Image (cartoon, rainbow over all chains, first blue to last red; front, top):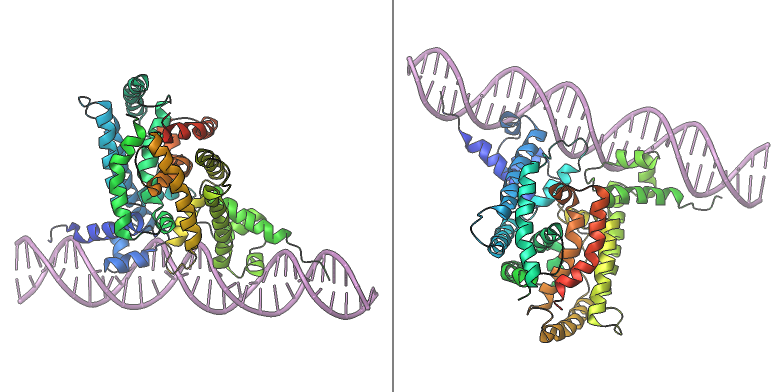
Length: 201
Length: 201
DNA sequence: TCTTTGTTTAACAAAATTGCTAAATAAAAG
DNA sequence: CTTTTATTTAGCAATTTTGTTAAACAAAGA
């Protein structure tokens, strides 16, 4: 009896992830996914029970990737608030370079009729995270290095500055008229730039 | 002979815009659109030649809305750079509150196979805009009210801070655990907050 | 009223897509 | 080598969705 071989299953999942999360082709069908993975379409039904469950597998992976990033926000209690943010910015930008359409995929899937995919973050985790950040932020505000704002707004700023330029690459790239390489360089440069925008000193 | 009555055509277009740009249900079919507009599905084929052309009509409208907003960036040469940005922030946030999924729709449509919809902005317009902004930005940098950065990066910052929180509302709202009204209030508050983040003084 | 023209509807054909299954194939164990 | 099990393939049925058409309907003018 052959060992259960995860190669084909992995191949399908990775191809689906590439199509949805990297290339942003949200209209792709099982036909297209199978063809690009170089496998028979039936294998999608063999390994995943159907289209919906393949989507769900990609979704779960995407949420996992996303959540683990967000958790960075309150991890490593030793390092300073500012270092935490620096790490968050770096991880988030790298994530968004790797999977530019990850968040878009999540959003559109959540908006589908009858989607029950979004499992809310646990209350305790969220509260711990927010309180932890709030403490560090208040000090920065007291120092005058950050303008007065709620921790929620601060988080919005961080994530917006990191995620949006990868998300809206097609439009922005065309708007400023630069090639792929130059755009990627800009995204990398943003890691230090965003810190300068967030902290005024 | 009856006067050509644009009511039904408008109704279909507006319904499609609501479904795509306001509610973000990018998977909606002609069936669904017709049903929600309260008209026979055939009318979509009567007024628009088919699904693709309805999409294109929505797309054109969306681009128009989007472009006119971007043009604000370099309009009104009398008012100061900072006032221009303030106006841009206000208009952009209002736009994103009205049509939270406008940019998402544009992005996913552009990424569809065989999409030829994106007409590049005219070179002269872009260059005029960038140069105009660059002049104002350089002064702000010299004043020390903005950290040293390219005008492109500055634009990214402005648009990111304005657009992302509307775009990713489902996730962010759940993340910070507030209701609809509170979230909308936060978006409004961002108008002045973003100015404080962009300009350090 | 009758005709003409524009609008709407329902029904149908065509295409695309999904879900399923039975047969073919490959791989491992005995 | 044979058997058993896992994997893969091709094809088909069911469903969904799109695109088309002919007929019904409504409105306005002759």
